[in-house]
Length: 200
Image 1 (cartoon, rainbow, N blue to C red):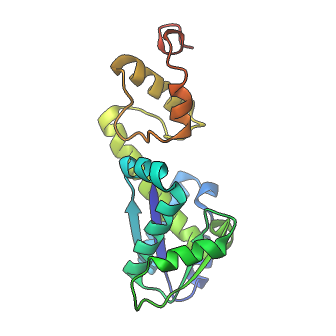
Image 2: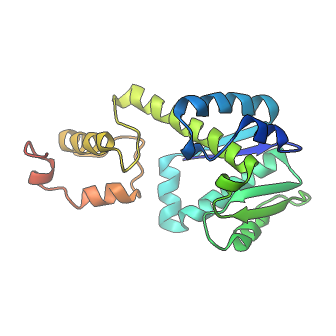
Image 3: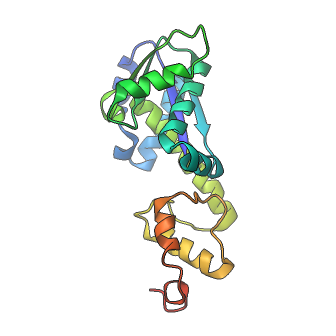
């Protein structure tokens, strides 16, 4: 998982670039915008390893992990106002929790909103950098494991790869989130029929 922050005095330049939610961009356009964003903004990106995600999901929840990551990135750039794509409907509570993790003396107003990456240019820009960091991590994983697909649950190539790896090695590949719901569903299907030669 990748989390990013983008800081800029005014968002006019980002609007002019045409930044938008990373999910609405082609890979080529996303790469172009990522380069442009880094040229005009202060930026920071954090990659969170699967083992860390699994631990937090088991103990405190993924949203709490994201909030801690937001706080670390905000601390790095120390903006006066930070907009966050809230993982929960109650953005005010999310904002308060993020603020509670900021160091004393850092005066930053936290505004957390759902779908902020669709409505606020700096959040859209951050989503682009996070997506690029995530894709770069996937490419490194492919160098190690071979073509494992995109890593998304809707990608049949990813599902096929996971099944084949599990069948051949008796375990899931490195870099896999054990708390991933897709993996849990596949784990429930570990039978000779599911992972044998007759697997469709």
